[in-house]
Amino acid sequence: MRRFITILLAAIGLSHAAETLRISAVVDPDSPDAKPMTCKFPDGERSVWVSNNAIITEKDVKIAHPDVGREKAIAVSLTEKGTAAMIAATTPMRPGFDRMAIIVEGKLHAAPVISSVPLGASFIIEGLTEYDDRQLANLIRVMMGQAPLEAQEAAPNPPPAEPKRVPYTEEEIKAIKQQRERMGIYQLDRLPDQAELDKTLRQGMTADEVIAIFGKPSRHNRKPDRTDFYLEYEIAPERRPDKPAGTMAPESFKVEFRDGKAASWHFSLWSGAPRELKNENSATGMLKGTFPAIDLADEDVNFVAWIEGIRIPDLNQPVSQNDLAALLVMLGMPIDANKHDTIRADCDVLRILAKYVPEVAKLTAAAKDGKISLPDLRAVVTPFMIGKTPIPDPKPSAER
Image (cartoon, rainbow, N blue to C red):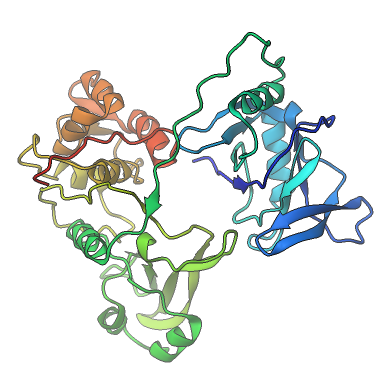
């Protein structure tokens, strides 16, 4: 999956610099190639030192286009050369500490902290609020090496604004949790800090003792014949604490066992992801179905058999956008590619998705011998998972 960096830009004017887009590294003041530039931060303007050496410019842009779902935003994909330069420059950077300098038309408009490394082929520039539609279209054209619009040419229609995002209610969070646990997915409502872990856990505890405290793990590799294993616990995405943009925070912790006894524990995943929100007025998932008994935390789980075993008795029941999102994400799991290379096209999950998602309907209609290849399935599902393709809204009925 491609890595994405969201670049939040402040107000941008229309100067005419030699470079339309430039991304450089923020460096120490004593670096030989550093120069000071002023940037707006939430707490006011201040100077940062920016490398004179560009990592990429608009010459490295392969494709630039309005980002669907974000107002006044540009999605950028880099050339092979630009991607290699971005990877090489960001690989040695420190996530949660080092910054990039985003310069548009000669002005430094953001210096975001890098949340993960390396950065790759694609990123999004958003917050271009002072560009009107025509100016934004011309900026994209210049990035693509094209001439600006002629005076008589109309600007293309802007992409639709992203729906307002709001927190889930407590009742919705509880319903989501229950639905996940029916599917064998277990997540914490709150992640303990290091002091709490050190106070709660002790060396020599058994796995059952740890599970009695924290519940079933989100992931594990525990087996009856295995004495060295781990239990990992992650926080539910809609329960993430609020944090400033660019701030890294722990998302899960792992307890390591040696000879069947707890030996160590540590935070295992850090992320800059914000709390997961929902589209305002969207319905919470309430899809009625039965799920086979399976431990989705087990690293050796057979996802193909599990998905094929899901039963949705009424394929005409009302569904919500969240239902479709959950099913698409389910199909995007690492479904046992080394044990299976196909999945049944007539399983209930694919049948109900085919009713609302044209890409899935096309895939099932073209199935050979009633089977769909997993690579073909992932190619269809991935754009929905990374937000490139919006999930259809089936507009649930009033009874829902």
